[in-house]
Length: 549
Ligand SMILES: *[C@@H]1O[C@H](CO)[C@@H](O)[C@H](O)[C@H]1NC(C)=O
Ligand SMILES: *[C@@H]1O[C@H](CO)[C@@H](O)[C@H](O)[C@H]1NC(C)=O
Ligand SMILES: *[C@@H]1O[C@H](CO)[C@@H](O)[C@H](O)[C@H]1NC(C)=O
Ligand SMILES: *[C@@H]1O[C@H](CO)[C@@H](O)[C@H](O)[C@H]1NC(C)=O
Image 1 (tube, rainbow, N blue to C red):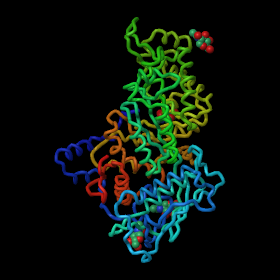
Image 2 (image 1 turned 120 degrees about the vertical axis):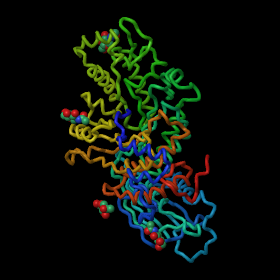
Image 3 (image 1 turned 90 degrees about the vertical axis):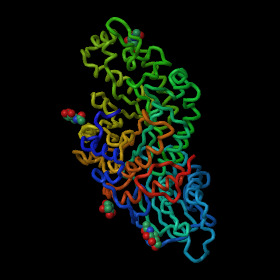
Image 4 (image 1 turned 45 degrees about the vertical axis):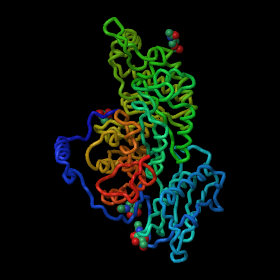
């Protein structure tokens, strides 16, 4: 999944060298805008709501008198744990991390907001459900005194609205909490706003995953794409095939995700309106699978003799499909989301080509020397297996490119850097839903404000009809794990992934980089205040600096 082409043009690299040698931050102006820090008329809101009017009328907000409550008309009440825990969480975000609670300011001098009423308007609040691609995340927020009202059809919109409300709170020059009179009507531009983390190249402790789910909620992300296993390690503990992690994980006890861990991640995500889509990538990227499952991988040959090394999954054995059927049956029960990501990228044909049994199989099936046909043969059978579990599937773009027959509800993930616009055009012309990740590979790092590059991407800037554009259901920021573990994951991700979050949530016309800079600088400090070590955009400071763990 690593694009051959990065953004590194020659000019870019030369300037980069100059910057590194001289250490003059000013040099970056030559290749990137460095906006002047100022005030946005949208305060510190991130991502920017679809419609928002903030009035220059400020109200007090005091921890001693303020509360978040269910409105009397709401279809959700104290029995709704998603809302109850969100109320607690957001109260703490607003008041919990500062010593000055604003309690010593004179009462009655300013008007005050004493209550946020949360009103779920539809009969089914979906409190006990899992979020899905069709979940309603819209909400309306009116901040007035003494009562602010947050209206949403479902709990998912209420979660987004609570985040927005918390972002409207600020401290005045005396350290007192304030919120302005404000009206918001909001909904996401795209339904699928995902973040990919890779727990195979390096093991990511559950704590780090949870912290990033927390940060995702602060940015209104709603999909955690969990690239849970790959060549390097198999940390997923399967109950049906326990040898997979026993032999394929970096360590069989300390570097695995137990069924309890996985449940915890899924529930923590659900409480924040985030789907967990697991990816079990085959037939390539499977070296670690082979350690715990005999005969699953293809034996590579040198001439007549096996070399002792292994290639992709062996597509010519019935046992392979028996294994896959059992394995994906389990996966489909463990992960409640209606989609599973089946990978299907970057299959290296060298080993298949070397294996005499595979050569014979190719002859028998009339594939000639076209190994794409063999790959398609495998994927086809896998898709049928997973399709029979009633799950939908997502796949990387190669599966589509190779002409595999796909179910109409398949989601194709476009990741290849070169010419992704044309790929979007092709995938949608064939009638498939698609998500875009090609321009958002955050594992590629560089000097300066690269968030602007992610921010400036317009996902629908490709040739196609309106119907085709509607098939783009969103996108994903990807942080592959080759050079990333628990030590550097969070600062490398935030606030760079925030740029993608705004592109996927806000109106298409929200493109002012200067305004974004002002808001994002504050949003980054807010993440820091909430305990997320998000890296700085540029020179400056936060009122509350990161205090360490
Ligand atoms: C909030 O109100 C204050 C006081 O009138 C005003 O100075 C400030 O600009 C307002 N904030 C925004 C984002 O409009
Ligand atoms: C594999 O399965 C196919 C179809 O069910 C069957 O025709 C074939 O005999 C099986 N091969 C072996 C080696 O069992
Ligand atoms: C899109 O489809 C056209 C026509 O089949 C093909 O020539 C082109 O290479 C495809 N583009 C990509 C990026 O795969
Ligand atoms: C963006 O579009 C919305 C609705 O189409 C409009 O209300 C808003 O004023 C526009 N914003 C900008 C910055 O052009």
